[in-house]
Image (cartoon, rainbow, N blue to C red; front, top):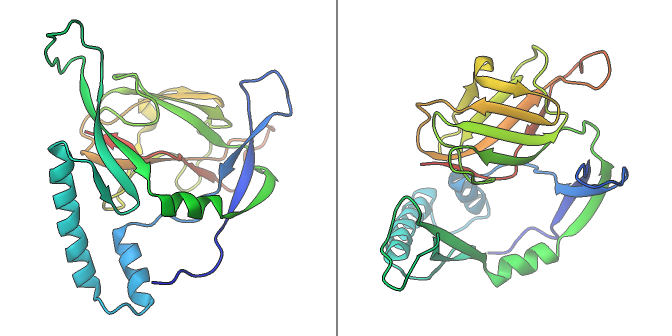
Length: 245
């Protein structure tokens, strides 16, 4: 199936607050939209594929379940845009050490296929300059596990670091929300669950009944470094997918 022309992205610059130089910046790709499997199927159908949406979704689901089964049994699998295999975290003491689930953990390693790597390297980049809002989330720490940018533990603490993040204002959507990537449901974090609310650091407690799944974190605020709040709220969606197990 042919693709639609040359690919391109926009990069905005953000303050790099970790160095002594005041003009250091780092680039962040601007996310233009978020797509799920249904969206991809609709695009494929619009390009006049011979397969129906129902057939493609059914085939994709069957292949996905087979891939999960094989990977879970130790296979290395190329599926879609990546190579998948299991890795082990945690140190074993001694030649006859046993598995300890409090120390050891199985993870999935994903390596992009060559076609994806080549497509990304061939993408045209437009650097738009310093972000107008300056709002950015640089990292997320799950306090329960200590993991960075990977997971959220229901009922556990979460620490965000970044710039101009302070939750301020009463505009529509102001606050922190977790967006379920499977069904699009948005779960708001109550303000009384936010323990620290500073421009460069926010700490909150995740809902104890947060359903398992993959989420993106969204932060919306009218915070401004001037005396007056922003007239319109600005939203930042964190780059990483966060797993709730």
